[in-house]
Image (cartoon, rainbow, N blue to C red; front, side):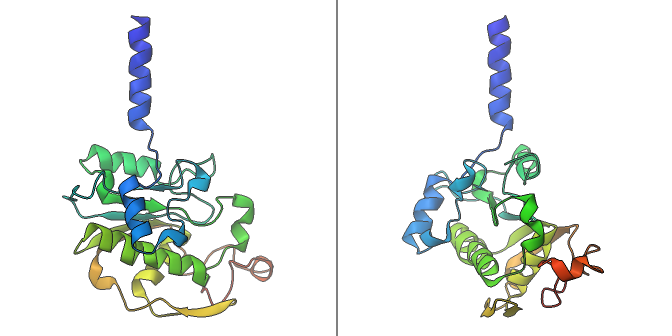
Length: 217
């Protein structure tokens, strides 16, 4: 009886824990289509750096794909006590009938909260996310439209990569391309700094790289 109980606990634990990285099929597709240098799997985070993909080339999505964009110093999945990512959200979607072929997430940054004040809307980060959204997920799934769920700084990153156009930063300028609004059905933004950040006041605004007029925070 005890062995059966332990086996049940292990089974439930395995089922509940959401692990990545991106499926082998998705990683093969990324390499074949010129995205290998973007490091979308983020295996430096082990199995918590990314999520999503088909089981095989013939595995066809039956639901509208959802892309998750995490916030400052977070990760795609439950990486640490301060970077729990979208693990619970993905688990919820799986319980509602979604599959990994319809749920996508990758990590940006180093998930170190001590470096939070140094993060900005820089060209490398947004260009990488634009490629993940436009080429990787939309082209890979052949979806007519996708949904986006974002949190904190991921909200403003998500808004800009969908809007496209010119991005002016303190470290350079880049063009993210035409608007993708026609490809996005629903955009959910949780606790985003759409009108700035409360901590970007007074002295903090002078010492935090995150607080700057170009990033509108």
